[in-house]
Image (cartoon, rainbow, N blue to C red; front, side, top):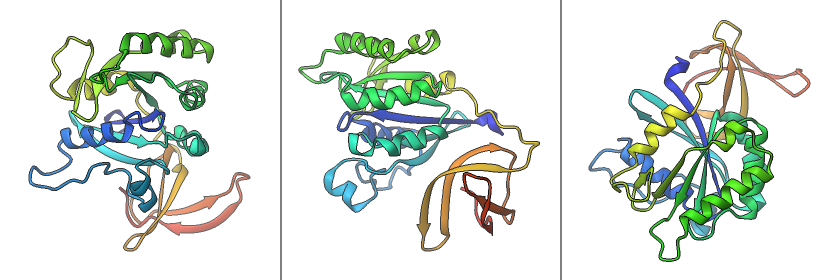
Length: 256
């Protein structure tokens, strides 16, 4: 049921703590067992990503919170991979903008945020790393607001909720002097602020595929946004190009 799903992307400049925040969200949502060993930067699974410590390919994960499935899309923060971010934003109904409390919004932040605003997404703004000695969170909020204005954000987008966080330490708060306990306030805000997907289940199944991967057990795996209808295992499907012409036909063997 679509009212039990939230699709949200997280955008930020490189090294502003985006992937670390997602790691903490995954752990606190109960995704892992208490006795399960979990590597840092779980979402950076590629060899080059692990070597360089940055996200190169956008990739989704899902967590459950209060009986709602939250699909989170981790996006690259480096300017060289801006096209990857622009492509996967079409999968999201909401977006989290993460800014370093010391560095503030950076040039890549402006590019990606502009794409999100143009798509009509209403951001949640998180000022991360507020425990840095050189942090200046209140000034950074002013800079973020000025950035929104320069990108012609509408009134709804300008009325963005703000949270302060330390993704590394796993806490988020609505005010700087609030208790710094966990990320539950952020999870609750995602449920409250992110719109439900607009899908008409009565129409034939159609999905906009944005990510293609290969699994040694499952074969080709497509990730994307369901724009209408519904599907189940063993449904026959067709792949169409941008002109609507059939490229190939296949069958759904597993839904994740």
